[in-house]
Image 1 (cartoon, chains in turn orange, red):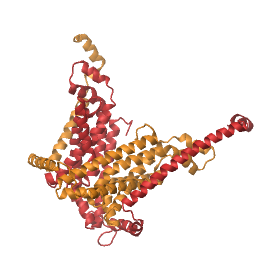
Image 2: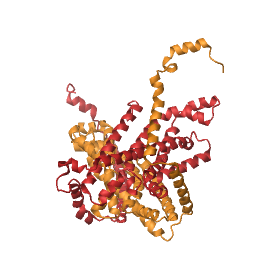
Image 3: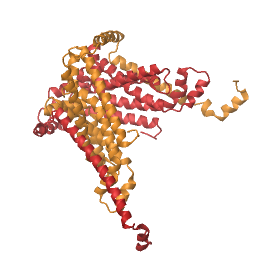
Length: 282
Length: 302
């Protein structure tokens, strides 16, 4: 390849000033942003008490822990752990289903094409947002105060915190549904309730089922952690074994969680594709 | 429509089929519907059975629930009541008595999530090119990277935090590291999914100039995916702010420590004050990142 003749280069520069002669403001934009991000990062490290010594000592410790984790070994508690895993799965399935059942009617109120007035929609949306703003673990603590320690508190915690997410997702599904079917029902003399039942629901149900399965999957993960605060399931066992430094049991429990999550993953993506066809769930 | 005669319309709309043909069609329709209904009923039955099994497994007790649901309602009544018995909003000064301390802790929470997300995003940026199908330099390296990312995202961040608190000591450092590792896994997967959808022609172009793998990634792939990466990283930051707000439950820094103490020791009005502050922070972060993402994608997606 040869160099361009100078005259060509000059002509090119004259013709595309935006490429060759970008104003300083646009050239400096990205570096400034990166510098600012880096500065905040370093400030953060400093503020959060990071230090090379602590890092080094901690990594050393962590290395020991990992060595002690091998080989994973449940000891004599395998039946307990299997029961706890079953409990976790139950919490996930039941919590998610409850959340979806509660969210469906509320999501209708938050959908623009069903409730045209901002007066209802706005407060409903903000209400759902505030529920989502509170983490599942916090809900678990609150429910433990109400129904006592145990998996039931976990079910309620997942149900309430997913109620917020489902409400939002379902209402979006309703909003993106095709309006033509609804108009068709209306033209045939259907009432608004008919419009929802025969015009919207058939379109929206597959989407909702897909999301439900997806959440069951992700809630299997959440259900493992709410045990840490005492709401039942495998998390309780895990937190206990970590606190008493039984590393072989810890690694076994973590492996168990990973296998269970992978299994649920496989099952639910199968079901999801069976319900909605080969489309990605959004 | 009004200028059509009614009879005209009817003549166009309806043509009655002969009786036998109609019967056959009707029959076929009924059978199809019956099969669909049967399938639906079967799946519904299986779902109900699964739910019942789950209810037994999770020790669901409707009686407890009914007996104690009053507690749930009254809990919200209690957290909005000051110790003097007055409603919290009658004395905001008393309600938010620890405002400065809580604000500092919330700042720490956001900072934990920022530092954790950024470190996780940088690691994910390095790893995702190795884990993506179309850009992986070596097949075995891809498998290693994918398994590592999977491990990082399957283990919940709070479990990492529990372990790190023991290894690195109590404090925000454990929280940051836990969030960083979990974000590496989650972002690595999302990033590599974006990379798998890029146009490979620029890569071929860059490779044709004799460039190495790193240059190919930098000059051919990165420009196509940078906006998507930034979008996902911002979303993850938002999620991590929520996650960081509970890191304190296990002693890994942030506002969670205060909250768990308030909940466990029944400092009711503190619970509502801290919860409101957390919700407000999450709102602000949501709106902020939403705005930035809107600008990144030029208003086409939010």
